[in-house]
Length: 274
Image 1 (cartoon, rainbow, N blue to C red):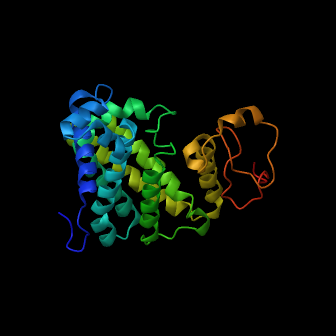
Image 2: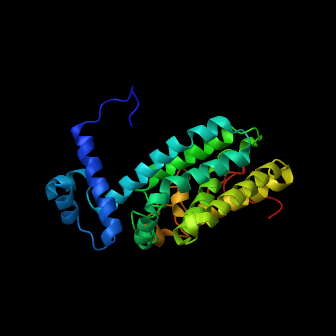
Image 3: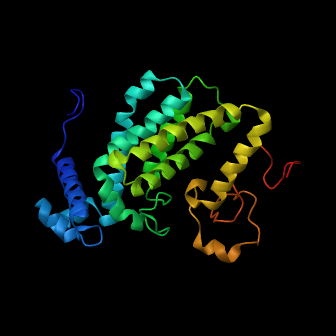
């Protein structure tokens, strides 16, 4: 139910929501591959052209679903973040809230997982199209850390949200294949994973362990293109090993090329411990 101060929903927004709801239902009933935009338009009572006006294709409908889940998740975590100050409780609350919000869509998630697993698909969580939803989750994890009583070292504040997002992606993957009653094992994984993460953050306050955290982060930013904040440039494949202009250290970075350096060292330099 909209809050009293929320602006009224426009007819355009109502139509967009109707098309999205219809698509989600048909994806669950018929499967993603067997559902066409024409069928979605027909079931929603709109023209095919109107459906394409709001969503350029089925992939964009899934992006709309991602955005809606992110918005519902953000609203669902308000209470736990306002109440809890322990990092473990805050992170566990965020993960469990996602499981709660996503519960009605479990079978649907199984349907489109094979499309999302395609690295060239816009449905991939690492794709450019998924960046708004990814950015929303990263912002949420920064809030989890900022409101915690656990002191986070300054040089890890930009690193940890990425790693927490990856932990959430791992939970999502497990949840997709979880067939236990009420996804009970997924909730247990969320609880134990959050506890382990909180302990890791506490240990990372010791300087001797911080390089390890940075090394893990650099491993992921090197090999997961979506985390480098720059999509791989297909043309860069032919340029690998040729060097790059001094002012262009990140553009066109692809898997296997230089990682983003969060350690404070000059680019290209190795620590004495390497």
